[in-house]
Length: 100
Image (cartoon, helix red, strand yellow):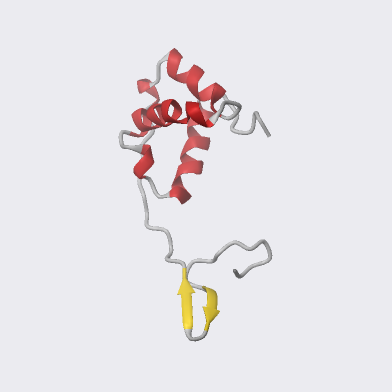
């Protein structure tokens, strides 16, 4: 991995070994609109307990995120998922680091 913190830089080689060069593709643009009117009070409660809860509660939280973004959150590129969750949490006045 390149970089001081080990993060891969798009387009830069992240590994070279015996003629094999591995690069990370740059992220594709993704346009998401958050439909906060789709959230119910019950949805907000699910999201507020999301960070402190167990993995067993993740399907319920992902269903709420899917509802807000209008697509299956499980199908999002992983590099886009955390910023989207953070934006939703900010919009409802919750935090994403309750359990940290």
